[in-house]
Image 1 (tube, rainbow over the protein chains, first blue to last red):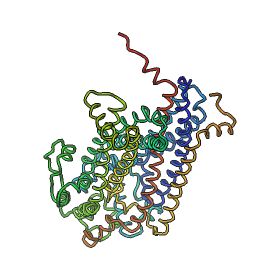
Image 2 (cartoon, rainbow over the protein chains, first blue to last red):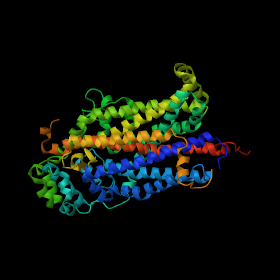
Image 3 (cartoon, helix red, strand yellow):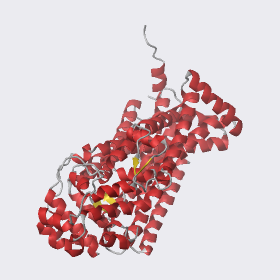
Length: 505
Length: 68
């Protein structure tokens, strides 16, 4: 069963299992709040729930989450009592189902970034600088009807209230029914792996940080035993794959599918007027990774505006008169007279003011990522594997520089702590760059953020109330995790109270 | 860029007051959820690594020497 008899690892596994369980519950609670927020605050998303665009969320709830919940409870019963192979199998299965849950949720998010198959050609037709997003699998009339209705009600100020009318849904018709397209979206695969690896790093990093802080306070050698090799190995490997492989593919996906976002990302390094011109040259790294050629020019916002002007003077009225005349009455005079070029330019111009912010987040992520890679390499070649030249270099930095500065014993926990904190910074900044850079759209090239928000007034008082609830959950959750983390025998006591389910240790 | 430049399109593309207010609570809510979910995905890896150490599996496999 537990051959080494090393109680240290088993005891800490049990304690962390309790923290994990509390965390799982908090994830479910906050997930429910987020889900209600999606439906009540951003109600046009109901259209996505009712089509196959969000069908992965159904799979998440009915397959992955339920299965994970059952296995978490089973693991609570099994750890330290059942045969090791059963215990480990349950844990691995729970982790796999948790990751599958992440895949389903991230697939829905990826569809909003790259609406694969949701009339793939329409974003390109309306915004010529965007590529086609897969096949034209959605119903064209339904897509045009939906666009006209959303435009009409958003400009009218009634917005999402229109969704409460059954007439609205009957006017839209059936939009997208293919359940597979959202899941084979090329952006979904990259987004899933990139985000899951970031989550693994943050989760393991949080444990490593807690253990390191205990070491800094006590200098008890058991904490370095817990860190090295198990946690340090996972952190170093996960981070190096994330930074070198997955980060690269994620960047490629942005360049391919969301060119204006890529332009916004590079605002800070594009030089004076760079991104706001037609094209610009960035330091070679961005062009090298984006196009494989360090001297390749990058496109500025003027380029996108010039692409918009290729749409000519065709108006929405003319477009709908030809393709979907039934919706002309909904467009009304102001919208019917808007040209497709003006519409396209408005989208580009609305992103421009956000570009510096997007870029700050992006380069914060890049900076944290570079430091992360350095920390991972320093940990890997000094404490985990030996390589002739690399280990000599990392030994020198760790022993002769860091060791002198902070004390030799502190170097390894310091590197683990650095990886934990930097992972959180990089993931936060990367997420912010991804989501702010998606503006002005909620569904890229198809539905804007204004078209999704509720038309009921969201007052500052209501926002303060919801934020207060969320912060209370954060504080109570953190205290609950701290409570169980500092009570080593809690799991055994809980199991005794539950009647000793599951046999003997 | 001003709203008057965009005309009626500003209603579509420039964040309304409702969007700006909604963003605040949505960002905090999703961020909080993401933190808990990240821990939920990462903690099993740490537990797994410690359990493998305590079950002796790592020692078992590292002691297997290749046959020549």
